[in-house]
Image: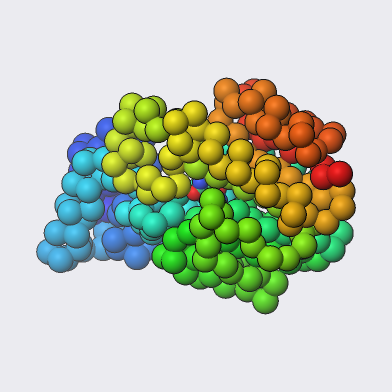
Amino acid sequence: MVIDALVRYVASKLKDNARFEAEQIVMHVLGIDRTGFITDSSRAVTDDEMRIINETAARRAGGEPLQYILGETEFMSLPFKVNRSTLIPRSDTETLVEHVLEHMNGKSCEILDIGAGTGCVGISLAHYNKNARVTELDISFDAINTARENAGINGVLGRTKFIKADILNKIPDGAYDIIVSNPPYIETAVIGTLQTEVKDYEPLSALDGGEDGLTFYRRITEIAPKMLKKGGLLAFEIGYNQGENVKKLMEKNFKDIRIIKDLCGNDRVVSGRGA
Ligand code: GLN
C-alpha cells in the first residue's frame, strides 16, 4: 500500500481530526517525518508494520489519547514525553507559564512546581529563563521519572531538582521565589462526565480536586507562606469557574491577587504575592 492510501485507510477508522491523527500514527509506526510522505511515498509497508498500524488505530478508535499512543506531545513549543502516569499537557496551561515568565523577566529565581506530572510547567520556565532553578514535586514516582527525562530532553536537568512527596501531608523544605501549580482541580462528581480520553486514561490523582475541586488550592494557599520568600509569587492554574473561589482562599495571606484569562477568554490563572 502506498503511504497516502495508508493514511486514508487509517483515517477511515478514526473519528475526530481523523486525517491529522492518521498521519501522526503512520509517521510514528513507520518512523518517518512529514517529508517522508513525499520522499518515501511509494515505500512498501511490511506485514509487521501493517499489524502495528492496525493495532494502533484500534487503540485510538477505542478512546486512548493520541499523545499516550505516540508517547510524546508538545508544550510551549518544546517536546515532552507523556505516559499514563502523567496528565497530558494542555495548551491552556501555557497561560500559567507565560504569566510566570513575565513575572520573572529573566531574573534569577528559585521555583517550586507542585504537581509536576510531565514537568511541563517548571521545565518550560527553566528552559525560557536560563536564570531559573526549579524543584519538581509530585506524589507519583513514575511522574517524577518522566519529569526527570523531560528535563534532560529540554536541557535543564542541571537546574532541576525532584521531590517525591504528598503535598497534602508534607510541607517541603526550602525557600522559593515562586510557587507554581496546576493541581488536580476537577470536582470528584464531575469526573465521570468527562470524555473517555480523560476519564478512562488520564491519572485520577492528577484530575481529582476533591468534592468542591478546591482541596489543593486550600492546602497550598495555607502552606505556601512557609515556603515562599518575602513578597514571593504564588501562581495557580484554575478551572474556568474557580477564579473567585481561589481568589477568596488567597486573600488571607496574599496581596496583589490577579485573575488572568486564557486565549479562549476563560479565567485560567490566579496569582498573588506573599506578605
Ligand atoms: N503540571 C502538570 C501539567 O500542567 C501536571 C498537572 C496535574 O497533574 N494536575 O500538565
